[in-house]
Image (cartoon, rainbow, N blue to C red):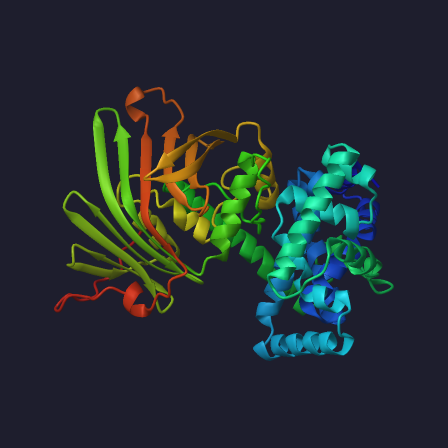
Length: 488
């Protein structure tokens, strides 16, 4: 079936509540979803539950999926997200048992390709760029020929073949870096034979019955899994809204996007660069940064300095200086704290808003690396599904690569893109894929005095350096007491 059929079926289901249309979608994609879930969970029963949850989520979000050409990719990413959430809900013992099982199978089968590739396959595919990932999914997961892949991607058969070949080479390098070395021919043959396995008989019918009712008849564990994944999606939206409200609207993605190396004779597009940057930040364990920011309005300029330290999963310390004043913000013991001018020490009433308080200290906000590091960019005010939003932004004709420039001696890509109410420009290091400069320009206002330009320059970037509590929690001066919690 061609991608346009998915679009028709989605519309029939979302607008007419057609169970037949939804059943057709499930039948078409259940093997792919089940296979990815099985590789992630390592357990057929868990994989069936994950599969059911993914299609419940699809039923609930069908109306917002406006780019059905990328439905296969959306299902792939949602399955990985759902499987990851499922894994977090399981005891660590289960994860160790799965790893031990996969290792034992690898030992038993010696040099056979599939047992070695299987544990790494979906992570490798997720690390590709969006266009390359779609090519691999269409070619091997959906078993389409190159002509059909080209049609699905809006490209010629020759272009599809090149894209698949390039993606296979990147998969080979990804696997080789992890000690699994096979030729691209062997990898392609292995994907053809094993990447998608038949789902258990009756699973499609069971999934359709539960998902078409949007989970009303699902078991308790499935409902818990669905709620957990939807909560993650909603949390990402909420974080993005906070970041946008303080000028932290950044380029990147909420989906896991592929860090790729572009061939020397190719010029990466703005969208490809954005995806590479987000994946690079996702892979960092820690980041230190310092710099300056300037807010300009009609006849007024306001400068500030900042120092930040970020660690996983949600640890940070920030110091901002402006007009002779300083503000420290940090996370400890699951709560958010502030210290202003070494005198006012408090815990935020709403832990979620500390980042907003930090970035708003200079009047406009602007620690853009925070949004990349914590994967906070996605849908903001559009109401779209986040994956669709990122796909559209990266492919949008108004997301443009400008002439390369240098920032503080670093050769940088320069990317401009429109976001609600602003035009954003990013200067991204060509070698380190880190943000070195950002400019935010408001859309023209009726009153020229309301026009805003905000510029930040990042220096002294250090990544993957261990950060301890001593690095992340400032010393509280003697005699300074924790005050009543301020209200936001």
